[in-house]
Image (tube, rainbow, N blue to C red; front, side):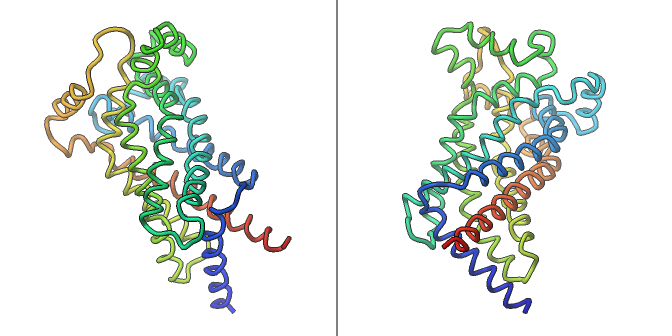
Length: 306
């Protein structure tokens, strides 16, 4: 009986993947629950992210980053959380919704090849970068302890950006550091979607509970992707910490500055990697598992109606 249930689950999983991307509309409940899962995982892992951010900016040890946050006071521990809460909620919609729509256009009938998954993931990452870069920009300014006196709130940062001219708002304000973000998001999405399902399928063959393969696949795949692109994450954090009309370092100058401040050692660039692993494991594991569960449940309901 257990083997029959396992086979039925694999069959449903296969049909869901081959048919769902071709659907013309999406279940609004899946969008809602996906947004809630992203919201909760972001809230729970935000303290870890903030410690990682301090390491990226100041190149200090975990204990020193925690000491800085503790010295500033508990009232500032969740300072800067509103932009990522909103951006991660939107990210869940854009990441999976745009990917499935693009995959359905590139390959209406499954199974989908690695080439199609890579292309759809790459393009969904581009959309994500364009839509969410302004949120990340505001978030990184808020989390920089050196900016607390000058910019105590999100409104003060928006007021500063809006005081620039049109091109200044884009290049110096909301889209500062856009090009490394574009590379990071597009490659990250392409890697994530290319290998998420193969890893999940391999785990499903081991007879594990139905929710474990998606959880582990998302956790492992998201973590590896994050670590591969970690230098770009550090670069973006440093570029977006600059604000105002003062001398703005170019992209190449920012790369050189990060390399020099890390003692020209790759190991120092990856300082904070252990916390990135923890945060990525929780966030991507939960997001992937919930999305997979909702997708299967939506497909099951459709079959019952038919």
